Length: 456
Image (cartoon, rainbow, N blue to C red; front, side):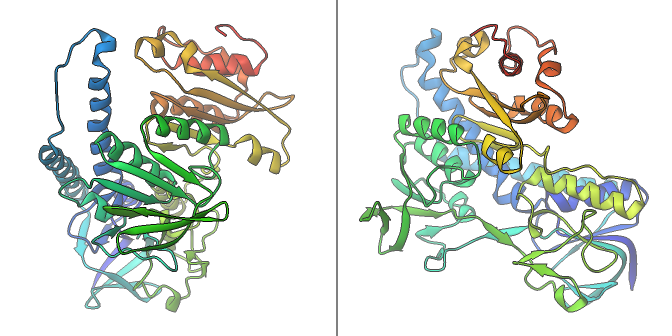
């Protein structure tokens, strides 16, 4: 029987990062992955293929507005076959890259489904036993269904099914206006699909800043996406989706339907409970070091009750390995973990919204700097969006930053550092930014939070 210092179950962004990090610290490491390719949902059927399609959509929008920049484009069209081939090529290359990293770091990869035999042994497909000193569960999540509506892989699809289509539908109804739903709405509407989004809550991307959500809804409306918030879907069958709103029932015909109502932990078949691993509401329970109720067994990523973000899973993997190695890592990684929605326009957020800050007992003030007042944004044709900064009254400490508009995903790094380090708006306003740049909008927002407005 082979024995390892560390066995990682699952090779997604949390799992493969944990394995490489552990191996680089001298741990004899193995990875167990049930799918044919490494990389997990994010790389194979999630983040990466979606963003590949988003890049094509962004380019199409730029071409549509080429005349604004002095370029005359007579006609162009989307070659969906080449788009799908490029999507596959990108995924293939990146998955091969992870396989190379496994080999380069002397990590053994076992293909199959892992299950615990006991608190020190896992089996692969019920046949190959492997001994471990430490184990990290990183099996990710799967798309959730509604109690009365389930995806069928044909007409009613989850995100994996939608990404597997070989041609675009004429119309698409998206059940769920969260991150995945609005990203697909932005992309498919750009490609000429008639899109309707149905969200049960009273705003899109629930949990994010309300003003940001309102701005996103306005942008989607300009793209001819129909959005219904406060919409309760009661039925999806026979080519139509039925929903209730304001006491009235409505029926929508749809060529395809995307069921995008969240994700749930993927722990089926692990046999974890049998060896003493405790669960809470379907998620694996862990302590501050991400250790489960069983010494030596850790859990990270979507299987635990933290935001389901690929980059957070990777950081949790490092934290788990730190615990195994005895390296101190007491940082609160949740407070300073950024979140990005690759919709059009982009959304990026870190820290607290004004509402969540007040619920936590903070006295806050918030300010917003419009991107339309930024010279580089104007040059680039960015016509909407803003940077919103939430600070604690008195101290001026930055509690949260929320951005909607071009370059949001690239600007959030600076804001993340500000929240992580507990910096004040005055301190961050002193940072010198290159001019002209869209990132100056952050500096301007920090100035506003101290009561000083320079360019507005």
